[in-house]
Length: 354
Image 1 (tube, one colour):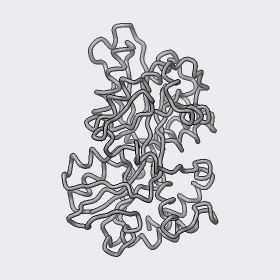
Image 2: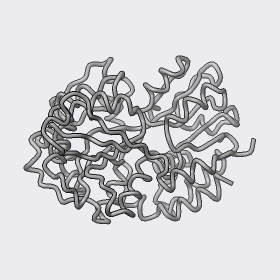
Image 3: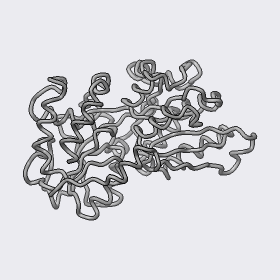
Image 4: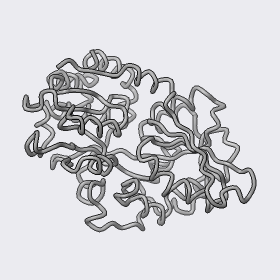
């Protein structure tokens, strides 16, 4: 089956046209005057984001919040290219935060203004200083699948089996877990991703191509693909598992025993923000114990906590980068990735999308 891709949708992503804007004005949000904060965040689980983060923050801080939703890379491009975007705070994946910080997109943070910063681990505090942003959750990826159509899946290498011909979806190279998919491909052939600029990964992806139906930019796209029978398995971030299983009760999720690759989502203040006080309040709110506990619920954002005062039981830890899953999660060298990403995107599109 010829690999298909919706060019119109990709073009819309490239221009940022699909970003949606929402003003949250519930209750007493405007009680303290015309203060407002524009927050750029991820396009997944927007209802839960509004209910469990944005609206409570608005009420607590007495600040009107305007939210822009979309994928990480597109939103970063929007802010980079438009210095007058009006965005005060932006939530990005770790690699995009690294890129943005090097491009001097962020306001230099004064960590002493964040009361909850001390509850992050030493490695997370180090990451915050390296990226000039605050990690607020850690996620990783695995395989989600319909066992009635694929049989049981226990390891990454199974995805290369001919049993999965025209059954698989993987994240696009430009998404949060696109580079991590490259790491898995290199692992499949027993080579390092750093060998010859990732040549082994592309060799493995070439043999995987007959199994691919589609790459995707938004995890929410997978629900329709599973429900229509277009795919039977996908590589996906753990943050999307609850949403996908809610849409299809047959879907199972596995993180192979061989391990996974982790990513932090971060929150930063955009340089030039005229609402610094509210921006710092939002950053501190995002890593507060009460919010971290709330958004860790499977009925919320399913965010694994970084605040060390938050502890999860076995049920709450399910499908999160927490406990044993976190122990076997490996890191992605985003400095290396970003150095090669432009070349990788060109090569990926030539191999996968043609």
